[in-house]
Image (tube, one colour):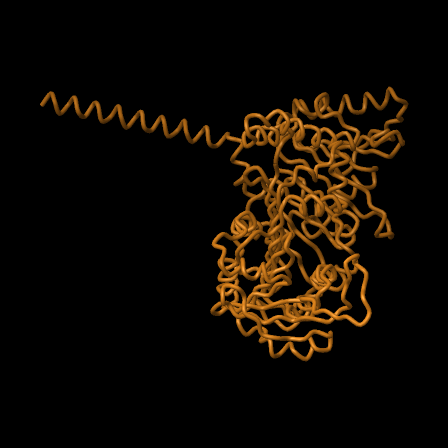
Length: 530
């Protein structure tokens, strides 16, 4: 009997310890900076002050310290200090651009949710004011901030005007908020929780007006809420209209017009040591379909191509239906094809119903298609028009291939052309392997494709991390091309300016996937950082 009582006591103590351990573990995980990877999106509190027609709104669901804690948690031990310092410089630079000192003015009270919105003012759609929202975790801290904010500017000679609008106390004046230029500024404190700073009293009054009418503000918009739910997790939420997508996001205006795009919603979240992005591009209601669809069997064929590609690749792309790409992607493909002297890739992509794999390496280009999509016989007339002559050939390993050559003037020992002498130059070759066909500009590359056992592991892993096998386009590149792309992106240059260093140099690789949807397109992206 005593043994039973003793065992019951031991069991009860063990269960209690397990419960306490589980609770402690849950608390640790809940407060871990790694939880930012799974932060659920919610409607921002400040969204009720943003007009639905605002050209751009950006909300961060974190405070000023959480990005530093995350960078410190995921960086290798030797790089923790440098990674934390880089994130801190970007944060401080962003607030400094708004004339605010994060450490001295914001650190003690700023809580999760920081917002910046462009607000149309007047009849000119290009004339935008701005609204900055700062959510407080300490009501007294927000009040003290506003007191010091205006006290500092009053001492600098700013005339202050204190008034009331819709029951809210407003303070307005002029001050050097950005740089040294004196600009209109207006502030309001909402329920001791939310600080609103606007580019003038008119912008702030407009924000207070729309907060009272659900039909006018962003928070009550069904489209905004459904778009937010579709995106899932994120620590940053962006909404932009075409007027801001060109100037702020670096998307060409012609591309927006050709694609009939009306706006974008995007969510950004940390993913390991990199960043993951999910975005939905909306098309105009009633606009004609661009005919870009992904066949049900295309995903399995694309998977076979990815599993069958071998060798190295600095760039790896899969196009599900290259012959019917939407207008938004046609310039991109045309620009890529223009870098290749051989006409074969352009002819193959134009005749291929997909999917098509395109790998680019130091050895040159490699295309993967279905065995009869397109059939080589269907290309012969177009190739002949380009001056290419087709012929069968057998490689050293006995594998049959078909090659296309064109005649060019022969060269002598010093590299000079010799009149009257012609030689055949290889423009491309094709080798069939079961249900797949491989096209290349180099016979050695085709031979490696048939014999190698290792594929471009880094790019394949990047595409797999996107988890978008049904995407219309998948594309992964290494560090060199990722840095080049980010260096040319206008928003990337803006962020580099805020951080005071070229952020593109930290890029270690990039992967993108674009999927057609009934109402537009969905973009999934992942940026690896070193």
